Amino acid sequence: MDRSGDAEFEGTQFDPDAVLWVRGVDYVTGWREAAQAAGELGDALTAAGVDVAGVKLRASTTTDGSGVVRLELSTTAAREVAKLARAAAAHWRKAG
Image (cartoon, rainbow, N blue to C red; front, side):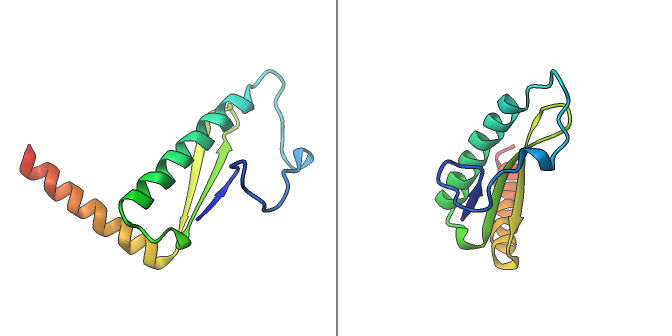
């Protein structure tokens, strides 16, 4: 699994000149929150048995500094996640 934005990420380097910066917007806090959420999601996918070789998580921010996590899945991983979501939804319906 590729967790772009994590400390271990060895992909392309961040280019601060390639983005638009708005004075006074705290992008770092949003990015840190997104990076933490990406890690939590990656751990949950691993614990659920998803083949994370086909999973890419990337922490980012929006123009207002809010954190976002971008999720990219291979078709195999997408089908695994869909199967897990259907099973969880069925379980919740029975429990409710």
